[in-house]
Structure formats: C-alpha cells, structure tokens
Length: 285
View 1: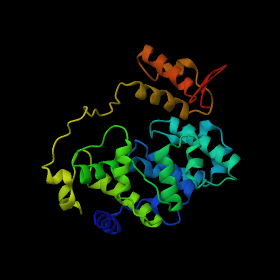
View 2: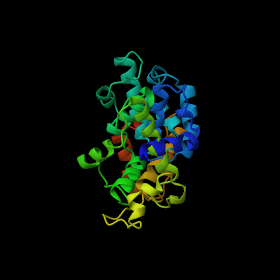
View 3: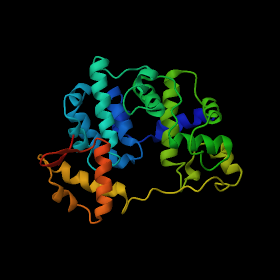
View 4: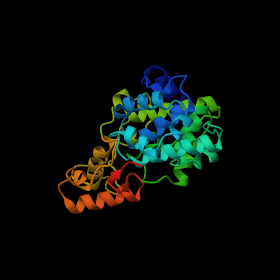
C-alpha cells in the first residue's frame, strides 16, 4: 500500500532533474551521484551539465590530468570527490573497456564508490533491484515504519531488514521506489520542516500517529563552515583553480589570514593529493 501510493505520487510530482531523464547514461548518473554527496541539488545542476558536456564518457576524463577534475569541481565542496571520480574514470577506461560496470561488487571496487553509490548507479543506471539507502530514504522509512524522527547515524542490519520489506520484487519497480522514496524525503519528509500535510502516506506514518515525538538520540549537529579548515582549504584551492601556472607560497598565504590554520590546511591538501609542491610553488595535480 505505502509503496504503491508513493510511486503514484512520484509519477505526478517528481522534479525534472536532468540525470533522471531516459537518455541519461550510467556514467552521467555516476557523475551526479558523486556530486550529490552532501551537496544540495540546486548547487549540482550547472556543474553536472558542464561535466557531462566536457567529459561525456569516462575515457574523456581519464586522459585529463586529475587536476582538471579538481579545477572543474569548482565550489561544490569536498573536492576529494573530484579526485576519486577521476580515479574511477581511469579504472573504468583501463579495466572495463570504458563502460561503467553494472555489477554491484565491481562498482564497489571503483575509487570513491561505497555501498550507497554502487547501489544507486546499479539501480538508476541499469534498473536493478537494490536497497538504495541515502539519508532521505532512511528518514522516510524510519518515520513511516518505526515512528522515529531520524534514523541512526550509521545503518544497522535491522534497518536494512526493515528497508527490504519496502523493496518491490520487480527490478524496474524497485528502481523507481528508490527514486520515489528519495524524492519524498527531499521535498516533503524533510529533516527540519516536513510538509506532512502534503505527504501522500501521512495516514500510514507511525511518527505522525505517535504525535511527532522528538528525537531522543545523540544531538544532531549541523556542519559549520565559516572559519573552519574546510573553508581555508577551499580558499587555497580557489587560488590554484584560477591559475594555469604554479602559485608561489606567498600568493597562497594571502588567501587566508590565520597562518597556523593556513599551514595545517595546506599540509592536508598535499596529503590528500589535491595539490602538489613544485620548484616554483604549488599546483593542482
């Protein structure tokens, strides 16, 4: 009942996102999944379009230096995703004849591809039947079936078992369920301000029936950005993305006022492989 209702709701209410269109390739879906990790859809739309136009197949990205992926990543945040996506493109081109593999274990073996990303690519790119458990899906299932405001920080075996009870048997229907439950969590059953009056399964929701009990687990802290090492790293990368030649140390230090924090951020960027020292300064890899 719940699954059928949500699927019908999705048919009429799904956002027109470019990576959901019928002609989208598994590679283009893979790019979207990397970009959407911890990043809102609104920030991903334009970068995704630029990437699929510049690198329409994995081989096109694989022949470029990794630094070009970091440069094109822009201000999406968490730029290690760009390095991992480049690494995945290299592996696909080298080991899989340039085609994104459709096997779950083979997908998991690619750089940057964990359980969720592998399941998402296999489901959305190849129409397979898998549990696709992102934060939105987990929240929807937890509220409907367990009557709890938020899922636990990490996925347990019990949560997977519960989620599997919602998974349709038919592969094409299961893939649509993954997309539909994700959409419901993204636009209606949101974390902070759920629009319960718009929810198609509000009368089947255990959390609503219980009177919306507040979260009783560990405090859920938002991710700060201003003044953090993440912001400092981003400022350093912004300088390098805007240059074709290496940046001298003095140019980079001007990007951030706190010397100790700058040094820490610079060291971490080198360790992560996002920038490289060279005789005249620092450059993208």
